[in-house]
Length: 315
Image (cartoon, rainbow, N blue to C red):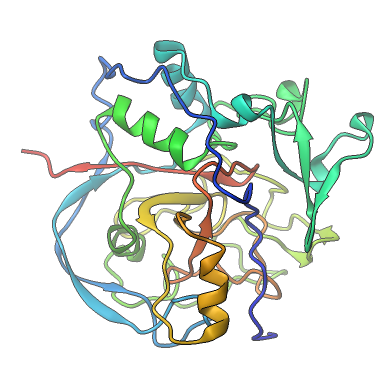
């Protein structure tokens, strides 16, 4: 693999210009934490001593103390998000801006030319793309599935949902501890075995030559149902691949390198995401490893970005 730092497959709107989110002051009348799974506390691992992408802040491997908590067994689904919208009237930032990022091959030809993102031209700005019309106007019937993770949700949208659901986004340490599923410093939620393009498909990522050809050998070209593939040791689904998951934390890297400091200067206020997505491949975005990380502006929305929640330990 080429070890040079590469632009992540997660685009950002750029300078943070939140349109604001509203309508979510209500608290759900339903106990949404009831189906959350217990995650034991204790000494957990964060990071790795074998960084997959240099200067991404993955190293070193370190031990941290984790308090017990509960976590959603899946990312928040379209059906769950729809209940939130119906109850609160929340307007997502994709709707407020009027557009969102869609992967080039999923943009319907009938929409005509779309604006590409410089440097990662496979991402296109599509007017009318949102959590229901995932690939643009009038695409709900083709791409929307109630049991798939909700996408086109910003960090701000996730925060609004969390408030309504009585939970919160996990910290990076909590997310990694949960993703390891009791396997210690494992590279992936299932252990050390690397996914490939031909025979080993433990998660929903890209197979083939990115970004031109996806063989879909794992059965999916975009999102998979939130409860698909084998769960990890704590019973959590899709902690690698499928959709990126927002965390509570701000994206930061401890480094003295001028190049890293310069990159971070353009990412002030960006939020940390974990887990990778269906667009990750080892040849380009090797970020479906537990220690891998990505940063996006909190108003950014794409077809491969979702979230899951955590709640306090049950009493």
